[in-house]
Length: 356
Image 1 (cartoon, helix red, strand yellow):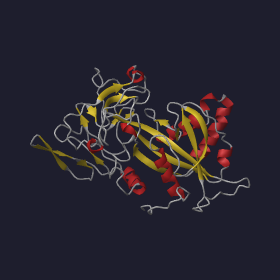
Image 2 (tube, one colour):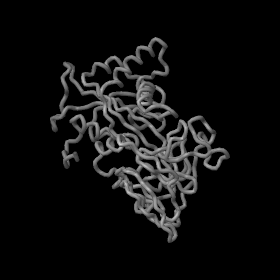
Image 3 (cartoon, one colour):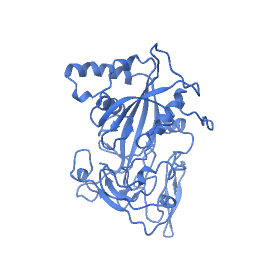
Image 4 (cartoon, one colour):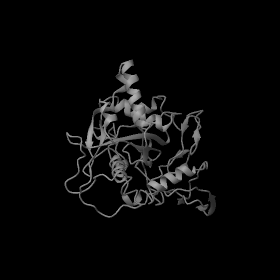
C-alpha cells in the first residue's frame, strides 16, 4: 500500500523490498505490491495541499468503494453494450490479491479514431507518455497525488472497475475537467430571499443542465483543453453549455463576454479538487475535476445572462438545491459542499455536525 503521508515506505516485491518515496496528501493510493512501480515523483505544491486540507479535513477515500466507486462499476458501459466484469465490493481495492481478475478491454471507436483530444494506444510507436507529470501541454498529474503505473498503463487510484482500456476517455490516466457551480438565492416576487419552512435556512439555486448523452441533470462543465488554465475552462464551458455562446452573433458574444467576465472575476471558492466517480472510468483512465462556486449574491449579474442550452446540454434551468437532487456522477456531493459553505438549506434532517 502506498500511503501518501510525506514519508518513504517500503513495498515488498517477491521478497525484495523497494523503497518508494511518496508525497503529502490525505488520500491512500492502492497498488499490487508484487508488480507495481511509480514512474516519476513530482512534488505537490503547498497551496494544493493546503486547499485540500481546508476543504476536506477528513480522508475522502476512506470509504471509496462505498461512495466514490459506485458509478464506475455500472454496466453497460456508457454509449455501448459492453458489460464490465463484475467486481465484488471486497475486491475493488488493488491491495486485495485477485489472481482470477479478468477485466473486459474496451476503448470506444471514437477514441481509437485518433481525435486531437485523445492519446494514441499505449503501445503505438512514438508514444511515450510522461505519467505523473506535465507532459508537454497535457497535464498527466493527478489532483490526488501519485498514481501507480503497471506494465506501462496507469492504474485507477481508487481500485478495480471491471474494465481496462480507456472507454470513452481520451487520456490514459487522469482526464481533467472543470465544473462551474453558479448559484444565487431563491427570491420571491418582491426580491426577498425565500427560506425553507422546516430548517429556516435560505434556499440556494444553481444553474443545471440536462446532459444529452445520458439525460441526467448535471453541473455545466467539460474537459480542460491542453495548455488551458482551469479558470478559462470554467468560464468557457459555462458559456457554451448554459448560455449557448457558440451560436451567438459576434456583437452578442462581445456583450456576453463582458457579463461572463463580471461573474467569473468575482470572489469564488474551490468546492472540490480530485477524483470523480464517473460511469466512464476504467482501470486505466478516470475523471478528475475542479469544481468552483461562483455566487451571484444579489442576482443582478445573472439577470443579464439569460440561460440558453448549448453544446452538450439539452436543457438548462435554475434548480432549487436540496438533498433530493439526483445528479450526474458525484455532482450532488459538490452541491452539498456549496450549501455548507453558504449556510443554505440542504436537508430537513440536520444529522451530525459538519467537520470544521
